[in-house]
Length: 361
Image (tube, rainbow, N blue to C red; front, side):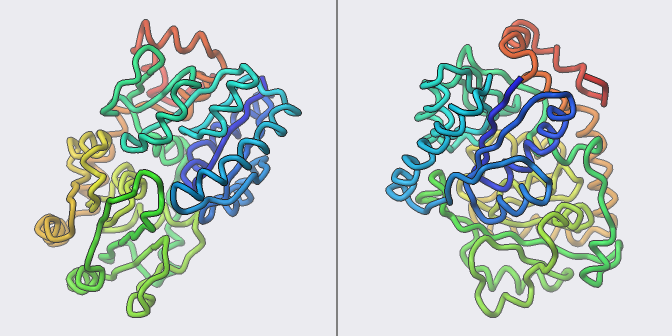
């Protein structure tokens, strides 16, 4: 089988890296069309994934629209030569349109409820939409739900083993209290008119009382915050999240990553309330959401004042992992036997239970 995968964000690389590796090891041909955003190309190179760069992410609807024309043209030329059997990605308009022109199925692996603009463009040309079962929207007969989160495609213990050497890189010990703080650029289409942490300096001042503060930011930091910036290679960030006392930030993906790693997370964003995954993680007492930092300070203090917060988080993680499936194994099987997989999952959603444990496909 030939599979064309689209990635427009660093998370997309992480989402598909284990799936791509396994598919190629099983003899399938995979080609990736990539749009550079932040460290997307860096990660593709780091994980030796076969890709062609078709453009660079743009800010604002007008510039994104203009860029999309180029992405579609380049995707069409690549697909025309590669002749894929299926197209796979998030809600990416260039994949949706080119797959329709070439009369090939397009499978969307989606989890962002408020990415409505991209979804409206893509859905008429999409053959299957695969989401976590906690996803709050319904796409009808082409919609399939699985018991898990896409972050488990790369952070499930079948694929991720934390490396404590990252602590040495930063002069930390396992029992040290440290907080990871995340700021985003608010440049995505679904971020328009939304916001997160308004007074960054004040929040850092309050957090400083409880442990070392480490900041990761999409944009340029205020010079007074530069000393808090995390200085490690990007692929080590998940190791750091695993050993952290708490995550606080505007990034929903990193909040979810922290929670599934057993690190308590507080997601501060006006978009958070639209996403089912955050409510699901709250059931495990691993994540809380707030529109602004002032509404979250009470929970921050409560968490950081506990002596055994790290051990408690890992215990909660074990319960979560027992409930969820191996998402990578599920994604691989869904692609390999598509369209039969869509029919099977619509008829018998419990089919996915076979992916609760690592097994040969």
